[in-house]
Length: 521
Image 1 (cartoon, rainbow, N blue to C red):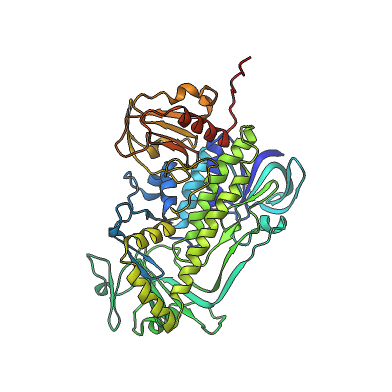
Image 2: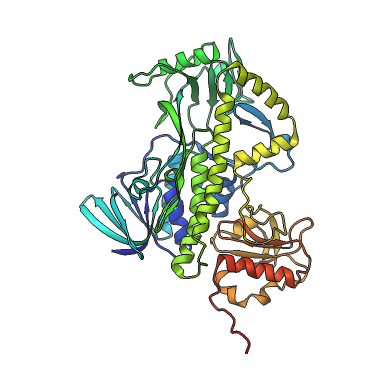
């Protein structure tokens, strides 16, 4: 069987890619070795710019259960168990969505199926080979082994990626073997919890704010009362003796006592599971040698993994999928410039490397030792500064990435993820996020006398074009790539010839015109 794209892995990243490709008219086959979706507790939600991306595809309401658009956290957050006072910022980049990973998988799988993707569970990739034109994928399924021929294969199969291994791609990085993390859903004494703030007061230690990890000289502790679930209690310690014994609440109680030097009663969780009860020793921060091997691509944990809080792997992986999806689709349709697919690695490696900085900086700042404590005291003083908080909030959100769009950066938004805005169009008021549900490039014309489209007839069938009223302080025209990054922008009320040429150049960097104008003779 010959197909355009095979995706190995039906976790959130693989399913997000299936949605992106399907929106672009490419119907992938998704292979997943597990016969049923895993309900193993993993990530507890999404954080940062990825929440806006989910909103741009109309998935936020499905995941949150609320029709209200996402709102940024404008109060406080944490970096390396130190408080970030987000009230210092005019525009916080930290959006959050609390929902378990298995729910994210369910929503994305349903959406991918709606869009026409084929999902085969219980089908495991056992071999692959490449030639100049295709990838041959050997698959072991419930009824035996079969073979697929595909234009491209994408490995979305996690940290132990078979796709990466079979492609001979290295996975260098740093292994941390000192830390032991324990976590469990558990019931805590109700009279220890403040009904108004959700804070947990532990006699002998003090108050612990919900969702905000803390560091003591003996380790780390966090209390996370996610809505609809028992609280998740977590600890981190260093240089713990190895054990093969099963994890238990008694073990977690003892760990809490060592970290807080106080006792916290923990009873079994109530309600339906699955419930967390786990111990993890060590961790890894790694980035693949390359994200592409000819016709094989890697996304998500197959390409990069991190030892850090905040679920950076899932947040990064979903954005990998959005970056790769439209580029693969353009290549398959024959409308991609020659170097477009290479830009996937260039851009997403930049984001992955930035996340290494985030992960390793946090690891250094929560480590044990009086020297680290002194560093944290100095760092806490710096966190009263607006610019420091802004930079760390953007780093945490993944909002400090600016892609090189290949031309002059004549507007500060070029290369960045487009901010949401309310637009008054001839058809009424609409959010920018509602205009990007098609995953097509979008030209937004807010000039005084809209007319940018008159000089772009060769691009009309590839663009969604929207005109709206000018807004004070906003750009007057924007070109958004399908992944919602700004490829071109201007603040001129009446774009001149140079603006129009820059727009034309930006379009050429993203897509070949399907109806190129006939040269004058």
